[in-house]
Image (cartoon, rainbow, N blue to C red; front, side):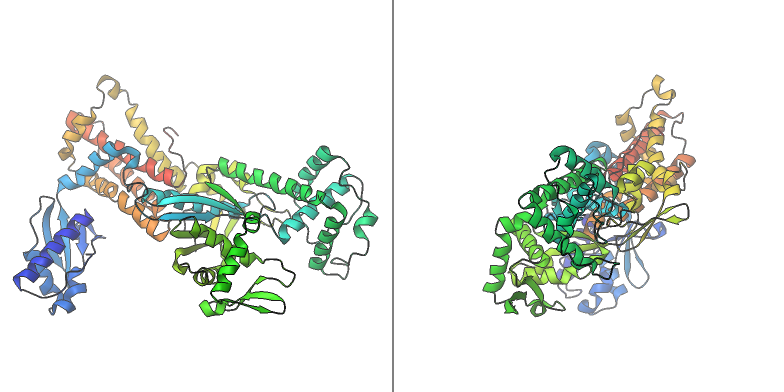
Length: 585
């Protein structure tokens, strides 16, 4: 309806121009929004105020001309001027009631734009180093990324969901060393565990599997392992130098078998992550390997593009990207003096690869500690001849999880973290998914475990799900067994829905398509959550004020049509954020 009114306003503006009442260029778009107060009508436009200067007249005078030349429409009962020049529109009741027809006809497609009618978007989210199970912070990234992917698809975008597997580099070496040392300990070699190693119990479980699968294949003595190594912390040494030296020693002693150790723990952790996410309702189109960038020559191709554009310089044997030429705060090393590529080189190669795969928008969902990431990767894209604005990044703030008064820690290195799996087992997938996306990504989230588990109105996910279940309970009522609901009869008599609560509920339902577009535009799944809570309140208010199973058959069937339409929209909205819509609670 917004678009219809915008077109009618444009027609009025053109008529004013043609009549010579004023002279201005008719704008390509006319802003039409819903009013905050129903007393001011249903929709409003500020076009008179935005165009008044170009038209050379006061806003209210231009608004009067627009109202005077506004085309007749059976969908609009009144066009009124308010304040300094707002134009308010009141819709005919048939327009509001039409939404019930649309919902029951379109079902789960109501509010959705035509599939793949907009740009191609690659949504990369979580991409946590595969160094341990996912923790509750990763869970927020998972819920947000999966929800915004669903919302973008509903808004007409062609969406590709991707997890970037950091399976190369130093952290993978530390992980492999941690597994090898736990394996040696199981075989009786008392090697002190490095300060900078991964300490989680999951390492012990994989070490047991490694021993059962390969026996003594990787066994080396403690003397061989520790010979001439520098001291560790807290024994007067440097923990980073020590763990790196231990990695070199592991390579020396294991030779080609080192890759077997590393791949075993990598695959074990990745399999656990995939299973955890699938159980959480998060499924990817692709798991993209960082290693593949080097093996395929993609990193080298990216550097060649930088060299061709004279965007790199050699200094002290290393290759530097002149990122400051493209707005970054400092230049970046892309190839070290020893010939090894940096993480940054892989990052820009990966984003070049995304563009080469045909994606128009690269949406990265990252932790808040990646705040410096945006400018440098955009600089890399621009230097390689790609539009820097194609990269869009949403940074996710931290989750603080409370169990009673105890604040839980989430360090994968120390092993003392609360896993996503543990959270799901305690509160359930639905509460976790709903709570995770209930706030904007740029706000910290305090996750209240006790609230998430309650079956009361104060628990927002219970509140919304209960409304859906209540509708289904209505349709199980004994009265409907003797006189079943006739949907066609209900749709034929929607004009019987004259109560203010009925009108308010239908107005809420008509907003759903706009909510999808707004949430997609702002990358804001909390928009859907807030709408569902508002819609639920509207339904409960309607249910309390209007007896659905009344004696009048036409009114009863019309109210049942309205209730069923509400349940469909609640279900559709919950599905976008990965939450179930139970039929009984």
